[in-house]
Image (cartoon, rainbow, N blue to C red; front, side, top):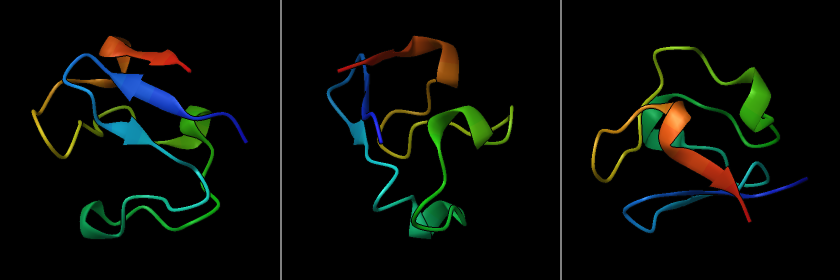
Length: 51
């Protein structure tokens, strides 16, 4: 699965998910809830780009 990087440098890896944010490992970036935000800086999904 493709990883996605936030402007702040945080990388969302679908294999790891975001356990602290309630996102299970194996969750694709496209399947993240619309209101999910970067756990580091709080920016929304629209500020992420494919790596």
